[in-house]
Image (tube, rainbow, N blue to C red; front, side):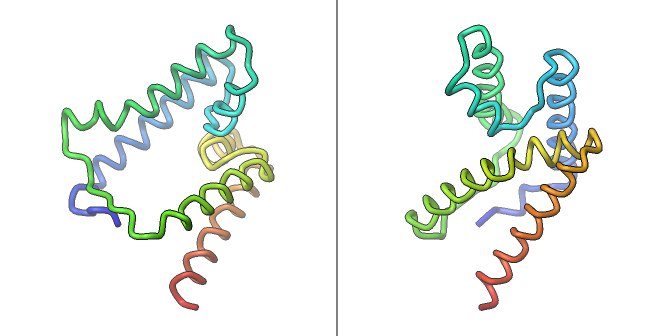
Length: 140
């Protein structure tokens, strides 16, 4: 559950702008797509010369909420699902990123911005699958 009292349109807009800026800078300055699954997967098999930027990017990704907490409180979050269900869900997401050749950050943020037909279709499938999952989970 998310504490929606701290989630404001302004902070959401700022977050979206920062994500877009980071993705654009990575593409322009490094020629790389800011797809998190690709960055992490590449880190597992990359040479040291290719690992430095990946480590920096992932460190920034993990450190960002901590840095943000100096300016504003983070929304409270409580896991209300069974831990086993969360582990299975995480594994299914990982499988989906392999099958879809990328994740929502690579396809949804970077691919759609580049007008990639493959990314547009992949993102539509991600969203339809998410809506179907929520519907099935809450209605049936």
